[in-house]
Length: 77
Image (cartoon, rainbow, N blue to C red; front, side, top):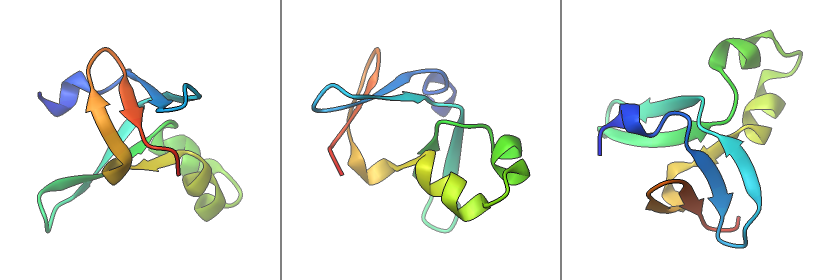
C-alpha cells in the first residue's frame, strides 16, 4: 500500500471508538518507517497555543496499527 492511500482513512480502535481521519503522516527518516498518524493538519497544530499537548491529543503511534483496509484499526492505548 502506498502512503498516499492512507490519507483520509478513518482511524478506529479495536473497541470501535472513532479517533478521526488521517490528515498527516509523520515519517522517521532515519529508520525509513511511519512514526505517527495525525488527525489534524500540522499547520493547525503549529498554530495551537500548546503544540506538545495538541500533538499528544491528535497523534497515534503507528506501532498501534493492527490493520489497514477501508479504515485503520489500532489497538487500545
